[in-house]
Amino acid sequence: MRKFFAVFGAVFVSFLVGAKALAVCPVCTVTVGVGIELSRWCGVDDSIIGLWVGGLIVSMIFWTIGWLNRKNIRFIGKKIITVLFYYLIIVIPLYYKGVFDKPCSDLWGLNKMVVGITLGSILFFSGVMLYEYLKKRNGGKAYFPFQKVVMPILPLIILSVVFYFIISR
Image (cartoon, rainbow, N blue to C red):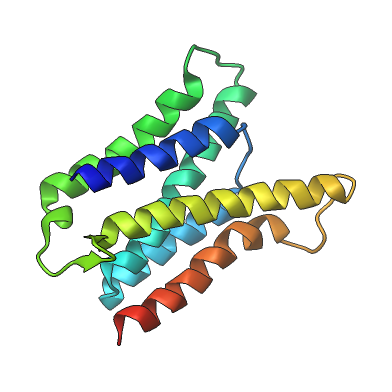
């Protein structure tokens, strides 16, 4: 459990340091949500589902902060509260459901869902940041259609395939 809180803390701090209010499009959020449901239905491993859960959490954080900013809703600790809120409303039910206590559910010494959520969060966040950087470098324009959707989702797809091969060995 100590490892879980260390990993969760590292992800949380990275959001506080690097996150600015960016709107993530609804298509991206829906895509991640559909990916989670499809994975569960197909019996996909927890590490892969965790990737998509992490991406969905980050997407919802960006979406909520963007919505709060557009509505001119300001309060102290808005980013911290939003990040904590979304991680807690996902992690606490999973914890009480016993998802983190499954025997033989370890990958690199950590629970597969924890690994997936952590890496999914980091990759989705990195994809959004890379998109913003490239867009700024290109005069405020995307390099190709739907780049805003592709940049955050592509790392999740790639790592899902990598995890599939790691786990199926």
